[in-house]
Length: 330
Image 1 (cartoon, rainbow, N blue to C red):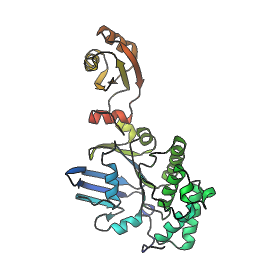
Image 2 (tube, one colour):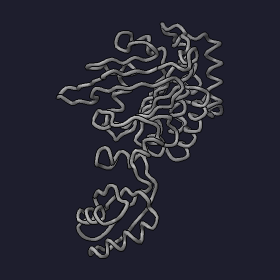
Image 3 (cartoon, rainbow, N blue to C red):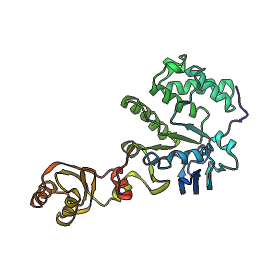
Image 4 (spheres, helix red, strand yellow):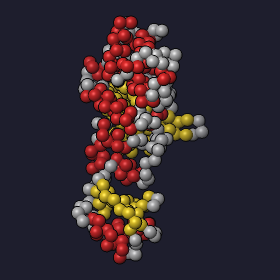
């Protein structure tokens, strides 16, 4: 059933270099004095694939909720495609596509009908909506199941259909909240392949995730969040360079691990930080040549027996640990 919307032009198609999302001191305080988002400042430009990265409860979903008019801010401003989200929420909804964590497809409709009626609702003509439905059925590899009931398709297909539906009306920004949560590896790869092509074609995408490797691989820029605050914003490469280390060494050993961390920090050349996390000690090391035999030698002289040891390049999780002093958990 058609809605009251009239088709609008994708603002990023008109001006691909402009800012399309801006948050100014954005705050969300829930009852019980639960501060979900704390004075968030954020800017996203057209064409970016921008990631909000952090553990569950960091404020990512609430931030997306405010930007998409589903959650009313307690304070600050949110501007999307040049429109104040609080002042004109209905207009903002016409300019964005939203994919939530939960499956909210219409189970009374077929796969094709979910796309077709979405287009009609957003003011497209019947012909335009049919053409868009055919386009996205093919793009998202859903053509063979076009006539199927939504309740009969797999979880991966359902998520692809959600993304396809969000794109039918050519939104200026596509919001994805944990797009691959709960998907099997094959479905995750298939979805990222499609999103990567959309990004190359210029689609602006803002996504939330707690999967570090995905964010590192696909995002142009990332904001790392925890407890409602943005701790750092930059490209994945620059965020990892901010660690100030060439290698990350994880050490498991018998004995007092806090004492081992102190020993390695003081006596092992090149160690910039040493922290204990549960049953391991993590070291940030500059100039890691020969680090393994040197570390074993220092530990053994200090009376520690090494159980396990691994060396890797800095990751976004390393950045998170450096910023918060804790591991990133689901």
